[in-house]
Length: 317
Image (cartoon, rainbow, N blue to C red; front, side, top):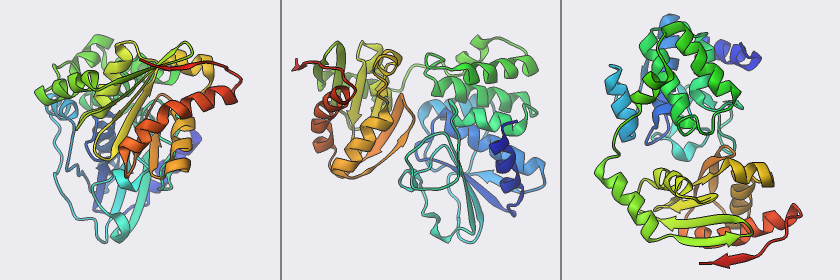
């Protein structure tokens, strides 16, 4: 067990019933599975806990239903202990936690305003698996494994920690990788498919040296649209919605340039305001004026490349 997981365990066991476990708004598979994992851990140690998720992504809701888990759609946080999972940004939470008695934050994204246990991990679910020491009902372990698979883009961006987490779940529960991947298999809902097509319709394409940068605008599903643009051939994809920008980078771009989304979003926030959260290849930013930020991205990418001694031309197509 990671030493910080031992510290996390102690902090969780110091909480008092009832405990509300809250993932970020529009919780994805990693967030909702991690919330159920933390609630399971607390309940197993005699601390009454429940998952509260007012908004859940379609894929997360599907996997949750397939494995027989349920959550509360609302809860009151005043005067009780709260565990926040898969975000360290208060702006990504469905509740104001000022009135909560105690708040424990568990995340694998840097850049948020909430202090807590921020791990260098491929997914929050990988941390929760370590917390549980892989000792739980196999439905829960498979749910968490699906969270790891989902947050590493179907293992495309998986590192050794992600693969070890998946291997240990399969060792305990049996089965194959396909059993976990199949939990996530579904045709995206209608409006998500429309959003992806809108992203293609509205995209602006730039060649930054040998790399392809795509910037686009949708009304929702910006994360799904950004990943789709990477699959379509972009090295960098930034997709904005009303007040949020989701971004993805290809492993090739990070490996060859050393530039991550932490570099990009830190510069954008410093120059234009807002807040960001995420990790090196997948992250999001909140901004008051998304269009201003989107227009600034090509120049920021170009500047970061030049700072690293990588001369190039910037061309719009």
